[in-house]
Image: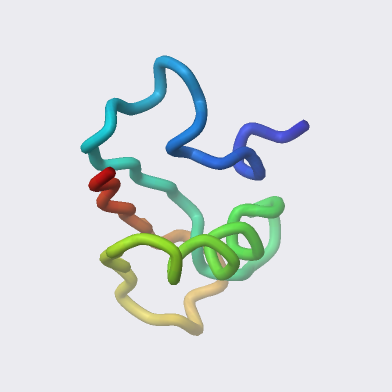
Length: 69
């Protein structure tokens, strides 16, 4: 299974009960794999911040999840 499709807060060693997890390439475009799809699915589960200059830029962008359990 691709690392980007696993539940980020469930992965032992990836985060504590509180933490920040960042993803790159959240903007759809060529060569970004499944990250934009996964980001769209998970971003509403956690408090998040999207750092994107232009949603039409064809890739790139940073998505940050704030985990607080």
